Image (cartoon, rainbow, N blue to C red; front, side, top):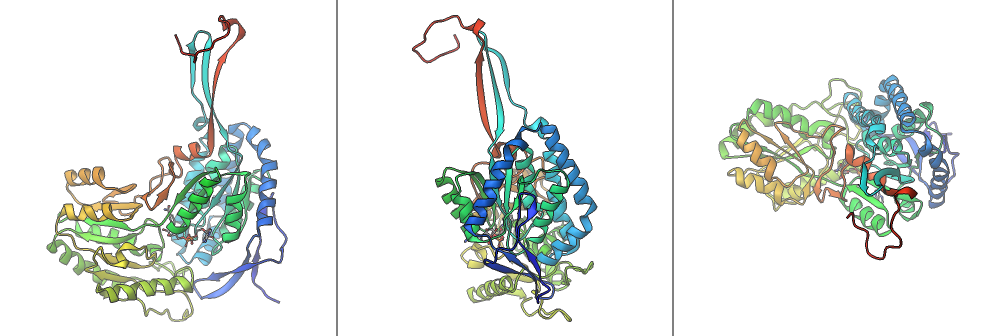
Length: 501
Ligand code: NAD
């Protein structure tokens, strides 16, 4: 008999019984062992969860927004109470360090904090006497049942970015998290229930393409928010919008850091090493391309960067001294290793090669050392494609205009940074760069919860960003009421379009 943990789904306030269908392994990336199995929902299981959510949603929407906010307040307390356990669970399934896992949770909780402002955020517009005896007002109403499909790399943050605003607006939410690390999403569901959220309002359906397709095809699901790789983002956007749903999809990235000749190089290298290799580069806002401007900047940068990459400390997720831990799966290590080999074959200069890294006592873990490429060119696949591992490419630019063209002409447009002491250059860069999120001497410019998060070009599909005021727009529909009481009705029948005379 196996001692593996068995994950099912969380529907209508309870874990479901095992259905005996397909399942997938959940690894312990630190050691390479399988630690759990997760059930992969069938279409029928997804449809059943959606039907139960639809039954629960009207009563939740009918609660006043302050009461809904109080549930989120209580959830925050519980998530803080359980912070250590959540971070350990997250680190053990994802592979990131515990300190980094705490950041993952914290950035999710900040959106819960934002969503607590829902009584204010949901206020509509009102115009008194817009015409003779006529008042005009608008209200924002929930969509009904909405779904979130999320990636492995932020198993707390991204589910909360979607669920907190959706629930606060009065929707019922179905989360289809990554099948690689479902433990934290299921725990969040238990905490929401403990916080007083009625059963059926936050549900977790584990699964793969079959579960996603079931959500895309189910007419009761009115909106889908997706985060993951670009090919899947585009697929979900196309199929979801064709079915008449509201869809926002956030995809992959290739984030550049432009390093101007006047930048403080010690600060820049500190920022670059953390942003390039933190979380083993498995962040959509990781810096994967450094662009020093001018040969002297490039030489000075490489002199400082190479020893730092060689000195990176890679350890198990539970090691408080580790800079980063293992990758999520063996498959991920193989994919990243193959990308590095391709870079070498394309003629890039691999100045630090971490492919043979092995951690004593953890030989079967999914580890990889940091890799650093110099003299990468825009024609190379390692430049064009997202690698999503601890690999940094240096593309040398002759001048600022050439450096600016790199992110502008890249297919992705998620994040970008410039390091400089020159305010004029920074201002020009922020105005002209074709990327959704810009850092000025800030390497990972993830906007705070009360702003919105979203990339451009092939990093984002749809009109509205995640969290902040856009989330309230995404998870509600606007109704506008034009009202006149009988005493204000003076005219007889009207056959021309009404105007405010
Ligand atoms: P992924 O695209 O493999 O998976 C994302 C989700 O889609 C998962 O829930 C998965 O089960 C589902 N999925 C996978 N294949 C599918 C298919 N064929 N049909 C339908 N659904 C499918 O992404 P991942 O590996 O979990 O995450 C890493 C990716 O996410 C990277 O590309 C990263 O840049 C991106 N990401 C983007 C952002 C952002 O905000 N732009 C944030 C985090 C991660």
